[in-house]
Image 1: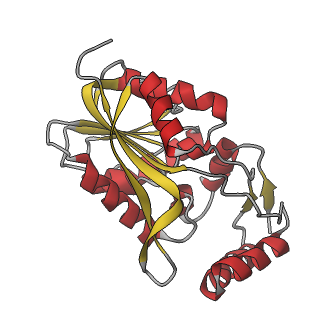
Image 2 (image 1 turned 90 degrees about the vertical axis):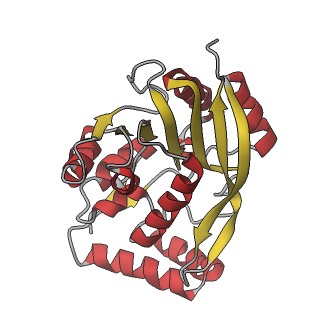
Amino acid sequence: MPIVKCQSAIEAYRQRARARNIHELSGRGDRSDLTRFVSEQILRQMRLDETDVLVDLGCGDGTLLKLVAGTVASCIGLLPTVEEVARVGAAVAHSSSRIDVRRGLVQRTDLETAMADKIICNGVILLLVEQEVDAALREIARVSKPGALIFLGEVPTKNEFEGKSYGDSIIRWLWWVLTNEGVSAFVRRLRQVLKAFSSHELFIIYPKTCFHEPRDKFVERAKRAGLTLEASFPHLEKDDANRVQESLTRVDYLFRKAATAG
């Protein structure tokens, strides 16, 4: 089993681009059903129009891009590594000529100023270190047109690794899953490990840190970057039994860029 220990989230996703299953780039393991569910929930909030230019910052395996293909004027997906861009670009190429997958970071997109009508950034903010968050919010505001709608999803309000003392040990991690998430989650994770043992699939160990901030403080942080809150709500998840439930730690936010520049 090739075990790869990564020093950053970007390196972890660079390695995931090598996985046989492209869905590893979603960060949800084998839960493609969950990725589609999350994408559909996001799109319900976005009020897309056929004239929109949509930007998906950290577009994962391209599920959301494929869902909107043909329904907007254009959609751009950004990913941080050339390996991800090559893998996802090839996977979505047949869906629509309106999809463009590019390399870029949420804090440095290299996109034109005021070019996006709608921006989605789900499950990305939590991967940043704190000093990168303000830069990311300013960059999102820069790329947004005046009045643009912005979805920032899965932003934790507290440290999700608190109390998880398994470190880099796979055995301790499996025991934690069994005692905290139940038998079905344990079986799914055990299968993941056994599959790695019996194949050339990678098993990636990644940093146990995440950006987190109470709702009011994050809203104020976004306001300083030029984004005004429209709504916030608990992130919706599906457990292994396919039951929809509200996250106890993660919040989804809808922001609006000021309608007038400056």
